[in-house]
Amino acid sequence: MEDLAALLGFGEKGWGGQLLAGALVTIEIGVASYLVGLLFGLAGAWAKLAGPRPLRALANAYTTVVRGVPDILIILFVYYGGTTALRSLIGLVVPGVTVEIDAFTAAVVSLGFVSGAYATELFRGSIQAVPPGQIEAAKSLALPPPVMFFKVVLPQALRFALPAMGNLWVVVLKDSALISVVGVRDLLGSAATAAATTRMPFTFYAVVALIFLGLTIASVGLFQLAERAYGRGFRRS
Amino acid sequence: MDLEFIQRILGNLLDGVVVTIGLVTASMVWGNAMAVPVALARVSRRWWLKAPAFVFILFIRGTPLIVQMFMIYYGLAQFPAVRHSALWPILREPMWCAVISLSISTAAYSGEVLRGAIQAVPRGEVEAARSVGMRPALLMRRIVLPIALRQSLPVFANETVLLLKASAIVFTITVRDLMGEANIIRAQTFRTYEPLITAALMYLVLTWIIVRGFAWLEARLSTHRRAVSAAAPGRVVAAAAVPLDAR
Image 1 (tube, rainbow over the protein chains, first blue to last red):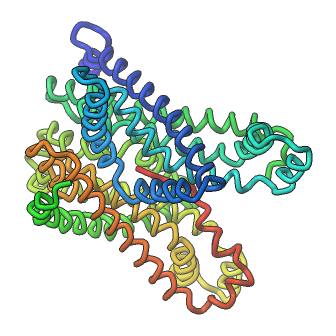
Image 2 (cartoon, rainbow over the protein chains, first blue to last red):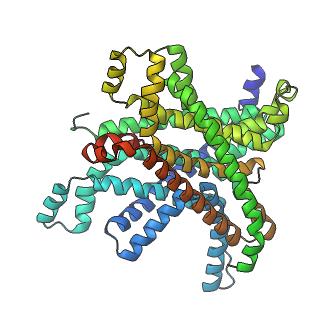
Image 3 (cartoon, rainbow over the protein chains, first blue to last red):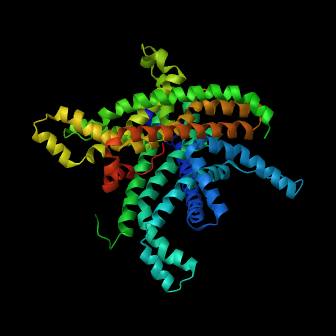
């Protein structure tokens, strides 16, 4: 037990510092790609519900492809393919300039792209759940469409969306572990280094699993609090 | 896109498709077979059955599949007892480890779906069975499980698609499934678009097959209620209300 404490501690031989740094990277990537995903989702839901026909078709293709293709494939595609494409695009516009896209940004964009497809369906469903009378009332007051969306539709849709948004956050957090495959030193990545050096893979991967478990349980709790706070004034069924 | 290049890599990718189909089929069969006892333990009134099932489902659903897979494939070798056991020839093989971890994962996710479906079985059906004197085991086998399984078919279709998608990470433990083959080609030829887009299209076809297959199965298993479902749609939809669940 003492060995384990030294191994996972913050002392000279401990890997605690590295694991903590990795956990922070994981949380950063998770939060950033969750926010990117929610933006993609809002745009996608708008395109599906009210967008012009070509945009609607594009949004449909987006959700169909992401839901039918493995997340890791899309991550690798955006990570390797996207950076190459962006680099040659910038090279065309401004010759001689090379841009390095760092791993963190590529990770956030690719994970955000994946979670955006789930968020699209989530927002579409919850926007449709807003009673039509509310929208008719807003229209009869001649509210401009953006005001109507942000002041009437979205706040009410959010109440329906919150449970699924909590679910999506847990999914994104777990998905972020895939980023270590492209060499980002997130929680799993730093544990892999520790496992290789100490030859104790089970110990370190088990610690990673427990950290993820703690994060998911804490997230579920926080989202329940948020749901309760946001659902004030509504009868609980 | 270089069509000639795609033609050349098509054979390798199709080899990967065969591995992926085998992997998903095996994990689906084993995982769903294990899901039934997990769900039964989860709804049990005995705490020593309920608690382990609860912790198992919580652990599997609360941690990334890739970490679980690494614990089994890279992790277990840490213990000399495992390395000297009779199971070592199995636990040493990446393919076996992939099937084991995917099955365990499926057992937890499907177990949770099945738990919801068991609890959603209409009380009246259970009471009717009890009133004719059915014992709990027979009641479970003849009444509750068949209804619960049929009700949760749409969710199982979804779960199977998620299993297919999740199966792609087995390439990180050196299994050469469809994703693995595509990634090897990408790394060796420095071409990203051709192998990954072709593989993505193949995954889409596999997803489509799963979705159509389950729709066919559902239509076959619910012919008797087709006329009824229009009158009482609430019941059929109830099971589909389970939220999305990627691994």
